[in-house]
Image: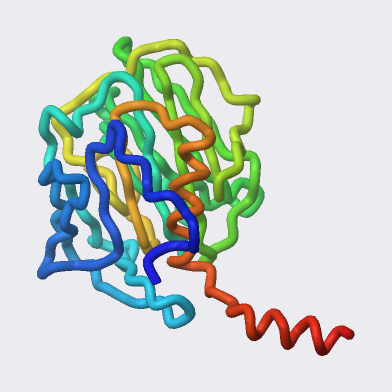
Length: 245
């Protein structure tokens, strides 16, 4: 099974890099056609028994994937970042995905918080004046549970989506500033400067150089649900109905 029946294919307009949870040697092959392969360090592959989907597991200690910096990944205008996977252990500013330097005041990050009352998604971004902007999701996440997390920024407003639903806190803050670039790699489960390693599992990751619409976010979500939502056959559903009646 490759997708939910009738689900549209993932959005390709503006796609810079795209990965699934399968590994070739130590490489995450870029499926966008842009040859932005990811290079793994101390990461391993696993398979969800419930669905058969592959994932990449990062230990939270010296474990990461790096997408080499180039003109296409050094995004400074609109951006969308999609991560499908689980945070297995929350850590203070553990990096889900990042292209960030706290020291230089550049780039962006998708992260999480470890505080029991703040186990949420955090998106941060430096503007071209070196000012850090950040917002968080307004829902609490559970360790080990798979989520489809998408952040979009259109140069004006930021949105945080969880499982196809707009979950932006602060009522989708208006930043209205350009994003700064840098020459760092785009990293999964790690940040080169300013964040921490993260114990997480990745089923898919996509990077876009434009802001996806809500309908596009939901399109991707529907396409990828099969990876972590087991299919219940019609026969099982019929049996459940009969048992009720």
